[in-house]
Image 1 (cartoon, each protein chain N blue to C red):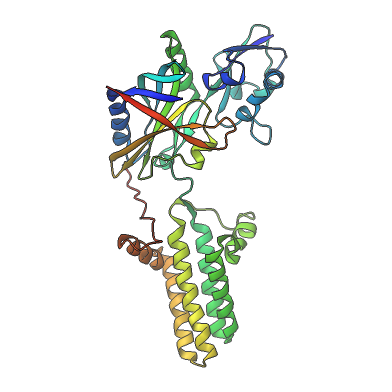
Image 2: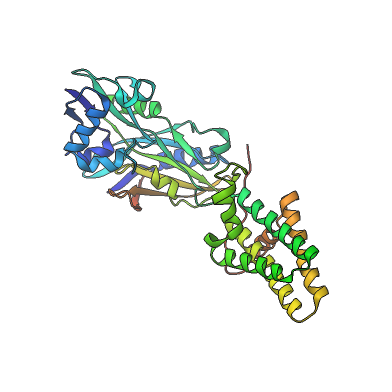
Length: 142
Length: 243
């Protein structure tokens, strides 16, 4: 599978990661499935609800936030198709901690932010056996 | 019969169904019935101990069952259970160092070397050198760290102090200390006793600087070599700017 998003969506993700620095910024991707691909329709930045001491290398999106977003998405005929978060001063690769906490199918977009400047964004999905993350094709449309 | 709402990522394991009807009078019964019908769901919902994973939340209507009677919460016909993900993650799990383990290591090194000097037991210097070099080559075989991990920490005599940090510079610092003590050992063998003790005291001084002032000279060397681009020193200091 691949995930498609517009330049504008990508810019919103990057801005959020930079604004959150030195903490991790995070959010949700609402969209729909088209021909087996995920297409992002809306980028929804959310509060990182981890405690202040952990926010520089952890993020948490509460189930209430997920539930609310799911209900909102469902009213618009959309689904949560994935999540995004930033890695301040770390590569855009998922950590073991990311993998332990990941769900299958969802796209996980990670933006590396070095000294406050976004460097790169990559998309990942968890394998069905939970063993590994694999890179997912990130298609940017105009 | 209650209904269970399946979140999008898990629908692949329920044959694409959004809701599944299950039998049972409690939440536990309902989830058992669900995973019995769709066994592939199990590893995504439960950990190896058979408990709900931390980031898997079950809601009865609008309420998190953790705030009700958890698995024992009773359900009635037509109740709606929802499986709701909380989303967690983040960088840095691989970049953590327990500084309490480091300090225990330093305290042992200082104590044993001072003891070696006072009691004039040169073999003890060789022993500390061996422990440090072995602990560098095979971090899991660090004897003093093992004392911390298996005795001091479980007995709560020393509290863990886990920080975002690179372990490599600390290993490098230990290697430098180990090499100094190896040189000291050779000096003793060559009967250059003064040099042997001088080298040992340098290690004591550096370990004490680290233990009492938090200044790790070996780490400073490591980061300096990193800035010079010396191969093998690939980790730069982790910036921990706080807003």
